[in-house]
Image (cartoon, rainbow, N blue to C red; front, side, top):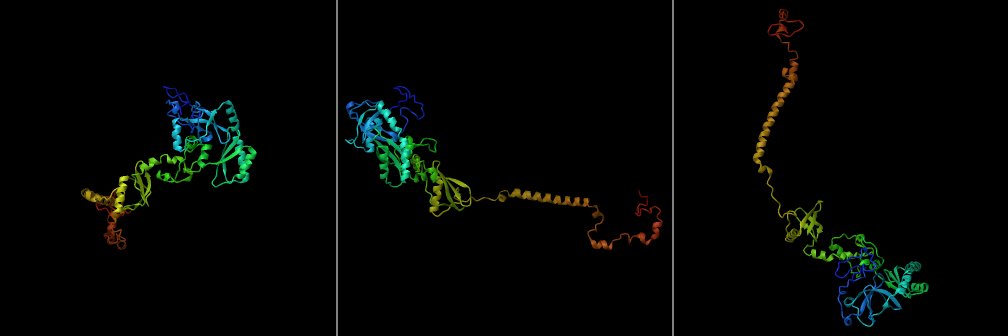
Length: 430
């Protein structure tokens, strides 16, 4: 559809700057960009069916039998099963023909018609009827609780002429609501229609904020719900945690399908690892795969480290395992033979050993001289370490000549009686 937010021909788009709260209805999921709106078609060849949207995403096709001059966004009164209803034109022209072919809707006499454009009286009556939605919803939930029916009522929509009410509900099993319809028709004085919807459609009608911080896709722009399988999470290497993969509807998130094709294309060249890689070090098991960087991480059983390998190296190891061979490690096929350091530096090692022996000999001699100088008693009495010799020579003056000649001590006037030390020079003792 054409933008109604300040856009003029030949000028830049001004924008409404209402951040999703556009008063013209140009910012919700039921609007379509009409790329043929600026092309003038001949009146005789113009397609006479228009697409009309209603409350909460419901759309249908209606024939413009009176050739009214309609514009996208106009409020119109259309034919209903019982009476009439009010809706807004969402698309017209040749795009409607393509949309009908896409949805396989036949262009026959069963298509209902557009009566006229809505006037001010129709708007006032429709606003008064919309005020009945919430009270009717709460009262119907009380009746369902009293009847103990296993169903969840999500929304109520009254027709513009106030003759019919549609109740939208979700349930896991089949529900017998015949008694419920009788009670509702008696209390609200309208024709009752019960319409079962899926949990995804229920979330789209109620709305909310997702974990991404934005409004739910099903309540803003997503209208067709596709099947989402758990294999989509496996292909994207996501943890199979139901609390993280489920949306507010309780089903798998629709956004899991958005990037699935990109991941499928990236996974074409990555091998499937069904068994651990066999190496001489042990079995290496796959821990993680970086799909877009094409790197696979492997780890051994008794090792906490992970080793990254590119795709070519992984294919090479797999081919060796098929042939019954094992590489030495994940990085190399053969074990590197390391030359001992002693052989490489044998001449330096011999010189170090030679000088080390000389330094040890010098240290031993030095330690012996220090022991002698620090122990003078050992120098004076070399026989101290022999206890038997000390017993025989307990008195060194026993065999001295002074003992055999007692007069020698008296005839030596130079010797002091208080100092028995013999002076060999015969002089006075200092």
